[in-house]
Length: 199
Image (cartoon, rainbow, N blue to C red; front, top):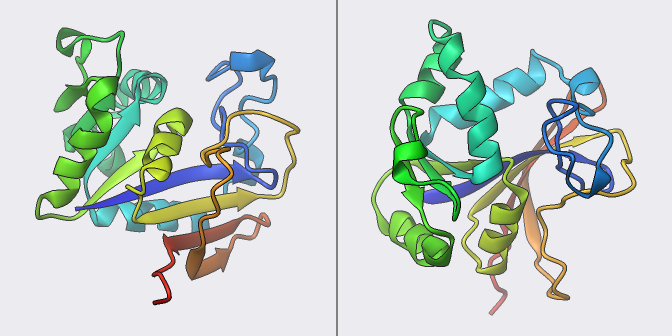
């Protein structure tokens, strides 16, 4: 299976709280919901829908899982919501228990086991495992070379600080641009994959 990290991202690389004002205020972040004015349902919606077609499981950090689990079950009846509700889900958390995971088809991964658990999932046959949001988890996966593809919706706004998915570890990581599309709102929808080593 492939690990695909999917995020809304500002020009300065911030992925924190794109969807709502109170979604994630860690560090005093005051720009929650910044992505909404740039959402192009036709172009961005198609990209998200296309990514979900090859997705067989979702992998979340705790906060993103809680946000999604509070939103999607009440939207049952919509085809995308039904897909979100039925798909296999993994959540990395040291504070939730399996009994807390009331959103259908959710499985707990302890943080200490995340790297090995994801390696085991990648070794399975199947489609994609999509990581939505989940900045801390995405950093861990990128640091451990466990990401096969990045689907980034780069939006025309600079936020001046906030959570990012790329590790600040001094290591260079070359990516290959696989595709790019421009939304009418100025969003660049870019798919990247780690570059193959030149040997």
